[in-house]
Length: 78
Image (cartoon, rainbow, N blue to C red; front, side, top):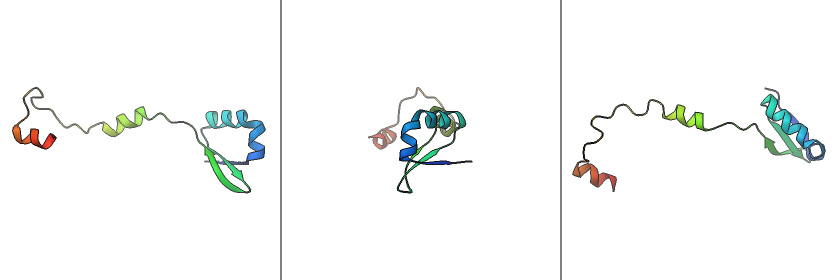
């Protein structure tokens, strides 16, 4: 993965160009100040799909989901 590094003074006049590059190439741009990295612009990733994939398979089964909760289970839920 190629990572672009640019100084603040170079980034400022061409900010839209760098943002388009991050969006299209899906690669981060690191912005530096006095040669030290201070900000990294990264492409946005939707978390909806990630959350679903994490939860997939986590529910093993529901046996009688409409049955009332037992007293000992009710106390544990408080």
